[in-house]
Length: 474
Image (tube, rainbow, N blue to C red; front, side):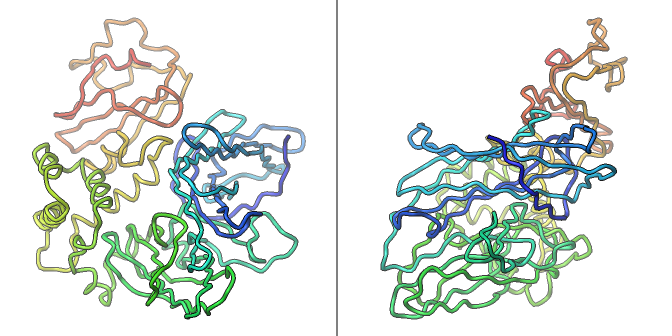
């Protein structure tokens, strides 16, 4: 069955990239299911419209993509849903890089552990991208306050009627899965649902945390009267004063003995700021920012920080980290950045800030269906060496002229042993050039499956993998 639906296209800041790009978000709600014991699971999508392929017809150009959601339990498929969506460009109409298409799939699940997969595929080009989550649905406790996942939005929710696609409690709630705010989107809007059956008033404080989970400032305090059924709460926070980097939106109950969060991150959502004109943290945030926050990082978060930092760690440092307990790991991380601080004694560590900006970029840009951005070869290279000076890109099934590639006529590259210096390749590949690193080096990354997962196959950088016949892998 095919559905023709009027698209909601929003204009947002973005980074142009090759291939199909989409961001995903998973949210859990207590409402929206026929059974009071079930939890509504929503997977939201934000698709780069400029990455869709459009086919020319007499009445304009048409694009079509399929967005679907799958749920697995113990490796068995228990739910699958998705439809084809059509997009139409009128005669003379074109697409810009700032246009995004939001979409949504949902189902209701009982208590248990599940694996949820969201996928988007361009039906014209075959390109796809996906995300997966492991989700534990709790058994709902009817006499305990319950808070849904927060949803971040690029625009404030509007009152609507008639049950439109993104409607919740009479509001148009369009999730902003990219979660990039700042210069173009100076205000972060949020939505969540709170149920308070108890006799006491529930207070929930809205905080903005820095990249190390330290509190920068507080927003509104939500006041939930006793005896309320699930109630929508909306609000906004200005983020135009924050420099580029990663942050967290945190909802914290005050003086509440028991609050049930529907998901494991306990009311916390990560978001990103792109503010190129803001170079320093506001002075009224610096005091909180300068305090060491490693003491507040739990063991699981420490492991994630370690994985994100691995490109900068030497082999002995990696072994040391694995041997330490949680307290030792916190101390090691604090010492690691203190040693690299170019301006000791100031509140801001420029080396750490620069790395966090890179981390934010690779998290968004190089994530695949199976790996986080920092786990990919592209992400590791970017984190360790920074942005390349130039990138040479080659798509699938194009005719590649290997005589134009570096070192083809001199050096150890042995292209002359093959007559296939100009042939059709079966894998997309990129060559990243760093002009000032060791006098000029390059990295060759190959996407053999066409899924956007580029693997490093050769580099002239010392200490990296070398295979001067890498072109034979295409």
